[in-house]
Length: 232
Image (cartoon, rainbow, N blue to C red; front, side, top):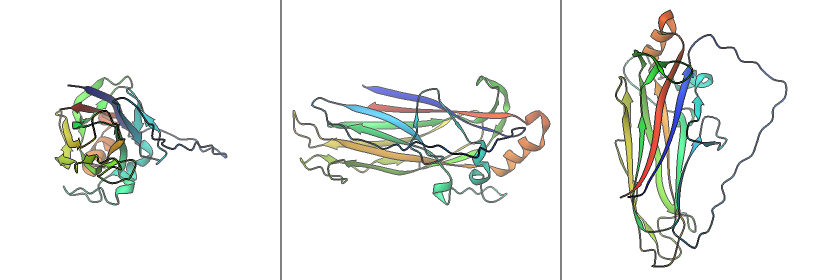
């Protein structure tokens, strides 16, 4: 069983931060280029979706949600959650690129947004900000056609997803699981395919306000995120 795992941290700072504004702006344009391979190949990558800049997330990286909390909090002060409009709530996406037959499982495990120290250790495990997540845009297509059937006859199943949403409100992490199957690629032939997905967040307004209004709860909140790809 082949296994690829990517771990990173997403976090937000609640209070006491000031941000400087510069008079100039620089930016980098990123784009994807699909490679071709004459041997079995599979890769998995995650991308920062907060600024839609396609920046690759590496293992151990952090996504700072501090600038976006006004957009990311749920829209009401009751127990309902919404990640609409989705483009304002999506925080990261993932790509799996492969070229051979098989069945695959991708898991996205998300831990609690817990009161933490700057080195990532937990400061107080009882201080948790509830967060609701949805996974969307799951698909699998061949890059030659951008359809579920490739030019050379390969076929991709529609990914299954269970569950489609999770709420993390205590110390127990929860996970999305997406599965798909690639078939009909001829023996000795390789045909590029790509599986996609994205995750949006809605931060609970009440528990966020409690953390902000209570001095002993002020500070840094961090959640562990692990993306794992398996051939099954």
